[in-house]
Image: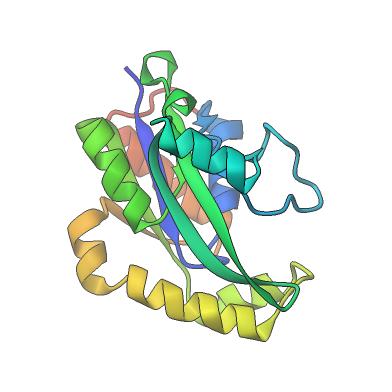
Length: 196
């Protein structure tokens, strides 16, 4: 039986980088979220997300196809918008191996109810100046959107929430060192055996 690793962290903490390392170096499968947000350059349908319209999202939600769903209020090209995300029930099959997902604390609660002891939560911790610098190098940096995300993240990732919900807090100023620490944790928990 496989395990599900839930990666959590503030904006630009390196969640996608560590997810990619788990897939490439440890044979994990990616949980493909469903989203209504616009596709970004370099993303592909069915590779990074399942991109759907609002109407399709609500149809899937209303017919019980999701383990969990959530909404994010955002600024996109200077315009307020709501993007919806979900984890579909058919995106995870632990009988076929290990999976990794990027989630927030609300999604973590739903996944923990669904997968119990087969789920490990990892919070990726990076100082704000490093996260801001990473975000600025992405090319679409907006100070107002950054400030909105910082405010949102501050409520989601309090010390109390981290102590209650997180199995591992992982420092990630250097992705290779963070991945080495993550591998050691997963091996100690019996999630990994022979990995690079």
